[in-house]
Each structure stands twice: as C-alpha cells, then as structure tokens.
Amino acid sequence: MEVNISDLTWVPFIYPRGGKSERTINAYVEALAIGAQFPPIKIQRVFNYAEGDQTTDLPAGRHGATIILDGIHRWFAFKESGIKKIPAVEWKDKPLDYEKNKTALLLEGAKCNISHGDRLNPGDKKRIARDIASTDPECTWTEEALAEKLGVIRQTVNTWISDIRARQRAGRDVIVIRLSWLGWTQEQIAQTIGTSQGRVAQIINNANFGEINNLLSQGRDMDYIAGHYHMDLALVWALRLEGKTDQEKFKELGWGLRTWDQWNFNECDERFGDDWPGRIPAQLIAHTLFYFTKPGDLILDPMAGGGIVPDVCLLFERKCQAFDLAVRDNRSEILCHHWDTRNWKWPITKKPDLIFFDPPYYIKKEKAYREKANENTPSISSYTKEEYERFLKGFFLLAHKNAKPTTSMAFLNADWRDFESTPASKEKPDKSITIFDYHRLLSKTGWEVTHRIECPLSSERLSGNQVQRMQDKRILGTVGRTLLIAKRS
Ligand SMILES: C[S@@+](CC[C@H](N)C(=O)[O-])C[C@H]1O[C@@H](n2cnc3c(N)ncnc32)[C@H](O)[C@@H]1O
Image 1 (cartoon, rainbow, N blue to C red):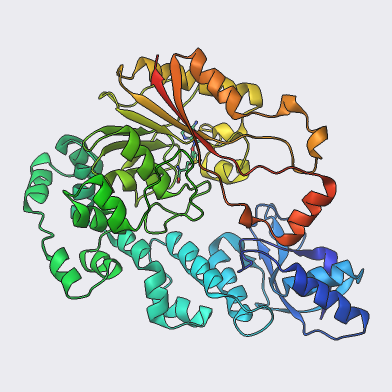
Image 2 (image 1 turned 180 degrees about the horizontal axis):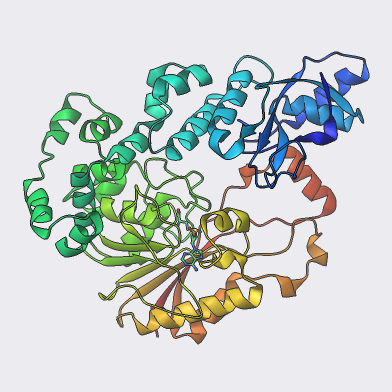
C-alpha cells in the first residue's frame, strides 16, 4: 500500500536511535533523484496517543496517529524530495492502544533496525534495554525477550540491566538497610514500609553482608553481587566502601578527584541514580560532598529527581533527606513534597548541613517535567520568569530560616537565554535568566556566595548539521552549568 507522507508521525520515543543521520537522509535523497526504489516502510495505527489527532475511525475522544516503526530516514528523504506518497506495510492490521503498547512498538522498531539500514549500535541497544527495564518494574520483559528483539545474547542484556532489575527486586530488608544508612529513624522506616519498629530493629541488627569481599575475591563483579543480594548497585558499593576515607572511595570508584574549580564530567556514571530528565553526574555531587561536608553530615535534596544525591550520600556515608513532586516505588527514600509559593512548608525537623538544590533550569525540559507533575502540583519549569524568580526567592528565604548558622547551600543552575533560533546579537535580555540573577537572589535572601564552580555540559549532544546551522545563523549556544556555594550571611 501507499500512504500520504503528511499523515505519518515520527515519535522520538519509538525511534530506537539516539538521533537521526543526516548523512543517510542525504544519500537516500540522491538515490531517489536517480530513480532508486526503496522497500516499504513499516507503520502502525495507534490510539490513546496524547499528541495525536482525533481521527474518525477511532472511538470518540481517542487521539490517534499513524506512527513510523521503521523507515524514518526513507520518510525524511521522501519528504525532502517533495514526494507525497510512500510505500508502507502495516505491522498489526488493527489500531493499537499506544500507552499499553509503547514498549512493544519500540522493540518492533528496534528489531527492524538490527538487520538493515543504519544498524543500531550497541550504545543505542543498551539505551533501549535500560529505558524499557526502568519503566517495567513488573519485569514483563524478560532478558530473553529483550535479547531476541535487540539481536544480542541474553548475557549482554543481563550486563546492561542487572542493576536496574536488582533495584526493582530489592526486598524489604534491603530498603530498611538503605534508609537506615541514609539516617532515617527506625520509627520513620517502620511507618514508610508498613511494619513494626521492632521488626525494623531486628532487620538492621541481623544484616550481614560479610560475603561481599569473599565474592569479590572469587572474581565476581559488583553487578553479580547486586543480583545475588537483590540489592541496588549504590548500596552494594556503599557496603564495599564502608569505613574508607573519602579519597580512597574516589579511587575505588574510578573517579579522578578534581583539585580546581572546573569540574568537567562528560558522562553520568550509570551505576548511580536513575535515568531522569536533567540527571546530573554522580561525580559532581561526590565533589560537593568532599569539599563542603564530612561523613555523618545531613544533606537535604529538595528536588531529588532520579535519586542521584541519595545514592552518592550512601557511598560517602552522609545522611540524606530527599523530596520531589514525582516519586516512585523503587525509591522509598524520596518522599513526595510539592514546594509551593502559596503554601510554603519545610518538611524536615533536623537542620541540614548542606542543601543540594538542583531545580529545573527555568523552562529547559519543561515538557519532561510537566509529564512527571500534575495540575495541582505543577513543576516550577512551567512558571513565567517572574513566578520562577519569586519561587526561588521564597525557597531561599525558607531554607535560610530553617538552616543552621553553618549550613551551606549548593545551588546548581545554568544561564538560560532564548537562543534557539536567534542570532546572539538579537537575543532579548529581558527573556533570559543567568547566574548573575541567581547570585542576586541568594544575596538578597541572606546567603553569601563563597564559591563559583563551573561544571559544563557536553557540547557533543548536537549533530554536525545542527552545529553548522547554528554557525550559519550566528547563534551562540550555551553549555555552561554553574554550581554556586553559599553560606548563611
Ligand atoms: C533538574 S531535576 C533534578 C534532577 C536530579 N538532580 C537528578 O540528577 O536526577 C528537577 C526536579 O525538580 C522537580 N520539581 C520541579 N518543581 C517542583 C516543585 N515545585 N516541588 C517539588 N519538586 C519539583 C522535578 O520533578 C524534577 O525531578
């Protein structure tokens, strides 16, 4: 069959690669110009797809679309060549519920891409396997099923996702140990997991993970040990590193210790924290803890996202209280709390030694955070510039009121400039928020900035073509990210 190019939708979640290849598209455009024939693309009609249209052949109110499972490069090439119709085959002959089938759709797309076209590279496959595992706590997708779809052996899938699965399978005892290491009282733990305080005490007293060193000396790796104990990797590492100095821990984790105030970490260390929009590298937090806290100190993470701060606190034997408006079953240590300008509440009684505050960078990733939030508890990334500044001012004041004289604030943020399609010289400064504004807000609310540490993002996320387009238009991007350390003044 042939379908209209304009009726098809490209859903980035279903597309199995990190990015599309302009080189492949250009090659296809050239081939089309000399009359080459291409095999049909693979498509699927879906309903219950939030960004789709209300099509007539679907039950009323069910937003639908025809999405591309395989053949994105051919689709772009046909579009660029001005061709209106493209040969296509349907995967299933009936429309599917998008929300219920999105993992199956992603895997079908991946399966098509392992045998032809720009084949998926191991990094793409690993990303898909990890994305699926983290959104599938019931383990509906077995390692065998993922291996078959991704065209790799089961053992490979196992090394990619064993830490995620171990965390998902973590039993109650492991949760108790984790929370107790993070400084929760037995009473708080008992309340959270729904058991008696006596039972919590018993679990803590009987915990015995002495075998870890034996397993290591037998050549077992940390992933194996995490699976063996049904534990997340952060806790296994914390147990392995217990009692060592901070510097020894950096060494064992394979992290070089930065001596100067420029902290470049290109990649997030996948052993720690969950995949999360705006996830930050574990090393950035480890350095903050190294320079500005000591073992046993209490760290507050008001917007904990994927849980990287609690994980690093476990490793470095700091206590931690973490909150976010979005919480998950596999992260009992992150409690639900919505910071709200209309109703400020401070959720902890003990005063923290350090507040590690990593809020959304103004409206960057607005859509991703909106999906995690809901109408009554909106993310601050949906605020106007004025509301966002008012929020931060209110938060800094509240934190100041509830801090000790010695409490530090580690505030991470980036310049936000409206540079998307605007040449640098035409940007409107009234639309931007920069580190100078954050500095001003901290100073006004009783915090004195003592350090400014640059922790830039990697610029490699952009393709050569995107960079070329920016250069052609004289657009000046931003990869800066700054950590401000402040003390109560
Ligand atoms: C930049 S992310 C934190 C990322 C985290 N440090 C990590 O590496 O995974 C910011 C977080 O703030 C949360 N958030 C935004 N507005 C909030 C609010 N008003 N109250 C509580 N959490 C909020 C979002 O849900 C998001 O998880």
